[in-house]
Each structure stands twice: as C-alpha cells, then as structure tokens.
Length: 569
Image (tube, rainbow, N blue to C red; front, top):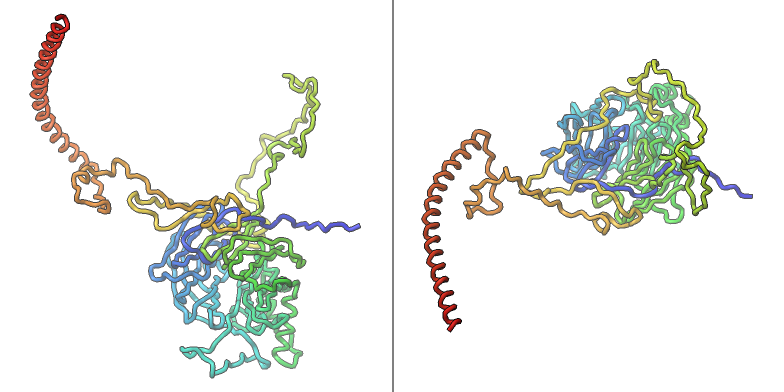
C-alpha cells in the first residue's frame, strides 16, 4: 500500500497574484529587514518606498543630477539608509528618514548590483558588482575603491589578464561576476567565470578558500539566505545549486583564518584553498528543469530558508518554480505574459513580489480561504444540508445549560505591558530601538488645474487567475484621474470679467484676510451705489408699467363691452 508523502511545509508558499503596485516604471525591488517597507528603483532615476502592509506610497528619493535607470536597491541593517546603483555608473546613498542624499560617487563601470555591508547600523562600505570589471569594495565617504580578486593561480598570485584583449579605455575585460556578503559582513563570497566560489576576508582582502562548482560554468548569481545557513548559486549551465554553510554564522572571519593557518600540508597554494573550501561549504542539492532546460533569473531563498524560488529567463514568460530543500518541485506559478526582471521573497510572510518588464510589481500570496469557525468556535461547516433535531427547550428563555467553570482571575496581579516578545525569525539579530519599520504617509494633493503626471497606486486583481497584464485586463481599469473642481474660495470674480484670458492662464495669488475684508468693503460700497441707481430706475419703470397696465386694462374693458353689445344685437 502506497502512503502519500505529506509535506510538513505544505501551504507555506504563495499561490496566486493578489495585488499589484504601479508607479512609473519600476526595475528592481528590495525588502527591509522586517518586511514592512518595500523599496523600488525606477527607470527615471528615482527610488520609492511602499508601506507593504497598507500598500501605500510613503516616500520618493530623486536626485537632480541623475535620471538614469536604477539597477539595484539595498537597505542597511536597521533601515536607516538606502543604496541605489544606476546605469550612469553612479552609487547614491540616501537617508531614509530625512530623504537627504548622503553621498554619491561615480565608478568606471556600470554597477549591476550593489549591497551595503550588513555589519554596521549606518554603513558607508558597499559591495558593487560592475558590468565589465571585478567586484569592488567601495567607501562611499571617501570614494576609494578596492578591487577584489576573482581567481587564484597555483602559486597564490592572481593570474595576469591577456594584454592583447582590452577595452577602449585600456582596462582588461572581465566576465560579469557575482558577489555577496555573509550575514555579518566578515566574509565575501565571489563567484567567477571558472565555476568557482572564492571566500575572501572583507578586511584583509585575502582569499582563504576556493569551492569548485560542479560543471565549471560561469556563476551569474550568488545569494545568501537570511539566516546565513545556506548559499545559492545560479550558473550558466541552467542549474541552481544550494550549499550548506559549515562556518559559524557569527565569527566566521576568525574561524576561516584559523582554518587557513592550520592547513600547511599541501603541495600547492591552490590545493590548500580547495581543502579549506571543504570546511566552509558543502553541496546540498541542485535544481533544474530537465525538460525545457531554461535559464534561471533572480533566484532567492524564502524568509525561513526552507524554500527556493527561481524565475524563467525566457522572454514573454512570467513563470516561477518553487522547490524545497530536499530538491523536490512543490509549486509552479504562471503570471502574465510579461518578462520578469526581478523578484524578492518577504522575510516573514509566504509572499513573493515580482517585477515585470512593463514596470508593474506583482504581489503573490496565499489564496484566502474563509474560515467561519474563527468567529464561532462551535460552528461546523456542512457540505450538504442536514435535518436538525431541535431540542424541546432549546429556544426557551431559560434553557438548561451546563454552567461553565468560573475562572479565577487575580485582579491585583501586575500586568507587564512594556516587555515585547522576540520574534523567532529575528532572534539571532539584535533589535535596535531606532530601527525604521514604518514611515509616515504624506499625501501629495493634486492641483485642481493640472492632471497628475504619473500613475500611482495599488490595485487588487479581481480575477487572479488571469494571465494578462493590468493594462490588458478588463477587470482592472487604470483610467486617468479626474482633477477635482476648484472650491468657491479659489475662484476670483475678476477672471469672469476678463474674456481675453484663456483656460491655461495662471491662477492669481490668494489674498490675505485683511485684503479680503478690504475687497469686500469696496464691493459693498459699489454695490450700495448701484443699488440706489437701480432703485430709482426701478421706481420709474414701475410707474410706467402701472400706467401701461392701466391703459391696457381700460382697452380690455372697452373691448369686452363692445363684444357684449355685438352679441346682444
């Protein structure tokens, strides 16, 4: 007898598109540490922040010096700073609370991805992965850069690049490499074009270990889970591989230095680094689509590290596949017919946000199922109608019911309302009192004479199974907002007296209180003089009307008398 395997985590992943966000054309997204805020980079060079719980727009960062599309956004540890990289080779650091620009530097190559060092609450060091150069450690305060090694030779010296192959500016070419910090920023994991993972000390910039990847293909993405226990690589051979981290999450830099100092019994330096790598990472499982052999894009872990999601890199496909740590495919999600360019899994909830090529952010969540027993514990759902046998005294005023046992409550006991229980998801991270979890939403009122320039807002999908984009779905209509009519206080009577002014003329400045009083008094004086002249004219006209009415009435009387005489005759 075959017993079905029950997945203990069944249902802890999203199932359908619940909602979408739209503001301009968004290109990349990132959650803060607790998932309460969602940052997005736009094609016009601005960075915006959404309140993910209310789906409300709360803040926008715009640099007048840069209008190039944003390639990546990264939060600091406690959400005080936001780093944005752009296609104009710039890195911009923002203060989240004040909205001020802290620093902006320009690199020699376009950074595809940049991340702040997670070890400091207000970091100034970031890791940048340029398009055609080795990964860089950048000091945003001074603008200094440190090039990280991307390969090692047999004697431990990085190999020299081919001098014949160079770019126009004289720099040697590099295959785009991927790099990421560990959980506390002590180590840097770098994936190179040889299919290797280099483990580098972030302080001494020294390679302590090398982990060869099966297949030896180019590493396109390298991602660390939020708890620091697993490392993920996405290679050019269409395989996603997950490695288990053997090093301690805290103090990994000191541990790998001890491992490197104790291993001296090897013939070459490269063999020594490979031996050190076996003490750092162990291959756990591999994921691939054996039928379609598709390339993967933007893979990442779930918030608890139990799930791995990967997106199809094919054009015109918005398809996600979710696996568990055992390597089994558990869910396939089909979205609109729009290419996917970025995704992020919520740190706590079973929710995924994806960015399409059209600039929409789709929110994938669990399908909501109504549970009436949550409102009435004795409520039982029935699939079919059943006959109910009514008790004789069931609806009496004083039915015979079992008396519930009285619960003894100590009314004099002290109640602790200050101590907060720690969330198990963030128990390994020190909570900061100054952590930014929410931002006040400041409404931006529209001018009554101007149409809004951008389409801003969030909308819920009425038909979540529809594969079309919001612009093509009949259930979701994104019409232009109608500007509100101007209030009577804003309308000046002088505008009606000037017919030569067109509808596009500027509105006059609103007068002060004293100015309004003087204007009303002057209008009152003018109105009184007009009323006097009008009164005189009305009196004369009334007399004329009375005389005219009298003549007409006399004429009518004569006419009626003549008519009567004619009738009698």
